[in-house]
Image (cartoon, rainbow, N blue to C red; front, side, top):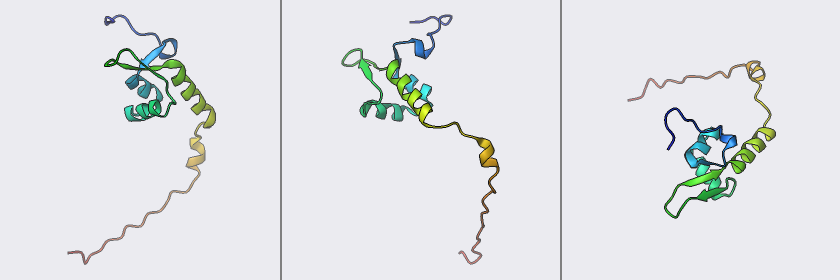
Length: 96
């Protein structure tokens, strides 16, 4: 166990992270991370039959790096130039 003064190295310098850590690093839910292990996108290792499931950092880094290469950064300036959508509120006064 690590004491309070000791900290883990940054996640990219480790060999494994927990499933919950992998989800947090990717900014996604635990269920999303678990589903990535089922479809083989994230590679996992089990410490024992009843033990903790650990995600390999290599597979997590690959997933994140590929996702950032495929998606261009969001430009909020583009969204500001759009006109706001107009909503119409309809009230039924005869509702009983």
